[in-house]
Amino acid sequence: MEGNGVRLRRAEPADCAFLVRLLESDEVEPFMAAVRPHDAEGVLSEIERSLAEPEEFGRFVVEVADDGRWRPVGALSFEVANRRSRIAHLGGLAIDPDFRGRGLADRSARLLQRHLIFDLGYHRLQLEVYGFNERAIRHAERAGFVLEGVKRRAYRRHGDWVDGVLFALLREDLEERGEGTGP
Image 1 (cartoon, helix red, strand yellow):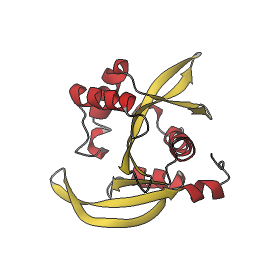
Image 2 (cartoon, one colour):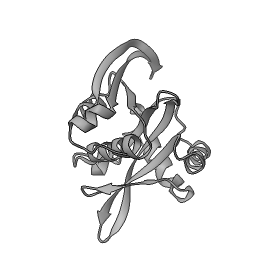
Image 3 (cartoon, one colour):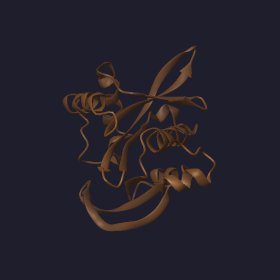
Image 4 (tube, one colour):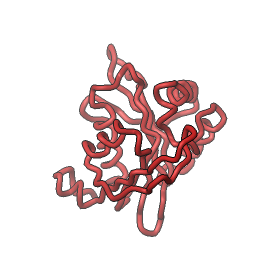
């Protein structure tokens, strides 16, 4: 998937080292879900699952054009949350700190939204971020997600109880934005 200066592609085993470095960096790890794998074995397992189950699970690399080639600068993912109701849960969005502030997260999220809704037929996309992650909350709003609620003090993270902030996006939201009607 490509558009507006950014490309998303499914991660491959060769991307494992890049993804582990990104996810374990001091500027990224504190904001990622504690249950997501950050080690090489876990990330490789997710990559293999993404390649084997492309409609139900996806681990993607975010790339930007750099001197005529695509350079990896981030990651994001999805997983089916409810097959019958066509709901996908999004997560794992991380952009290399050296590339932040360029709108890459927002553009990447919009590419993934269109792919999941119009190519794979999902009806609802949902995500949850830690309440202390103000950057992720602003990103979700800019990317068109609608705030649905807060799970108060739901998670133990970094020694404290923290809120989970819930967002969702429906197929109709994309259609109202004029971003295609899909199949």
